[in-house]
Length: 444
View (cartoon, rainbow, N blue to C red):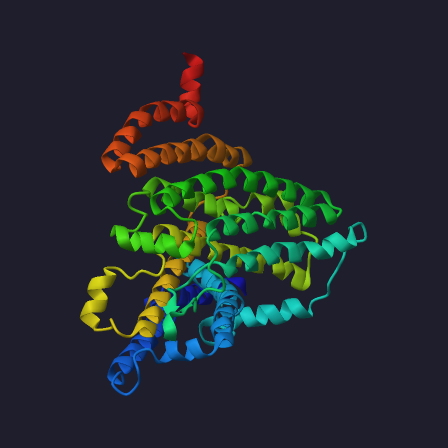
């Protein structure tokens, strides 16, 4: 029976797992279809520009302050809860199956698109079990403490430019609040998520969740340091903690900060993966060692809350990387592109195109998360700590010093300082962060 079923399964994998048509249709669903809708909207806006005022939407916002407040909230919450988390669950399973020659979700809806909905209904209907040895109040509170910071950071993350309404009123259509210390707010709120993980593991009354929560605490504290240091270079170049001002500074400078801040960009990516407890840094929930880590005793929707928070944190980290290093909502060669498309007088159409560009960039980072998961095995715990303290922190300090000289005296001076400091840094890393270097030093 098993022998006869094996060729059929192999044929199904060969037809579905290696079928480039399915991959192309998936990409079309995620990228080409939304782009076509936006392009059609832009064409219609240009065609009927003589019948409507160029600032018709801005006039509507300027006359209705409640609408100007409601639309950003609806946009952000819809993107967060209704699109990102379910779409990323399906997208991750689908991409992993294509990379690993598996079937993936393909039965519930076309291409398995309704699988996240089926999983949600299943988790809601499952029995909610609380262990007898658990601290019940804290056990039930912990998922909320993890999910709340993941949602709260969305308040200040802009996914598009500010639209100028009638009378010169600035409306943050794609952002709920434009704080002057928005970057500081994001790092402060996101660091609170570890409290829910620690309390959830401790309150479970079991040794494996407790070990997983302790691992998560050490990991997040270790990688918040290089994560914060990698951002300081961008803040010095932009001269602001406001996300919108950082994007405008990249526009005025003529280049995205991923080029002058390439070391900081790479450090931010690695530390961001560790901060979100993703492979290869998911030591807090290593199933081979800790069963499922800090959420071992959770079931039902409380179990789903931890994973919803994980995907929302991944999206928030992708948005931050887009804002800080990839120009935010700026289009490639934006001024040249808008001039040749003739969209200079249609600010709302341009804002929608820029918001779409922001979402595409952020989804690019989400794809990197999935790609890394399917490629790199999990680190050992000592390797995780060595990478954070002995490699990323020295590199982020080196990047901070030469960026400070570049911001004050110009990039030639900054590059000279980077080269001078690079030699002792290399010697330090070779001796302390490289096992072969340590062995050679001990023999000498």
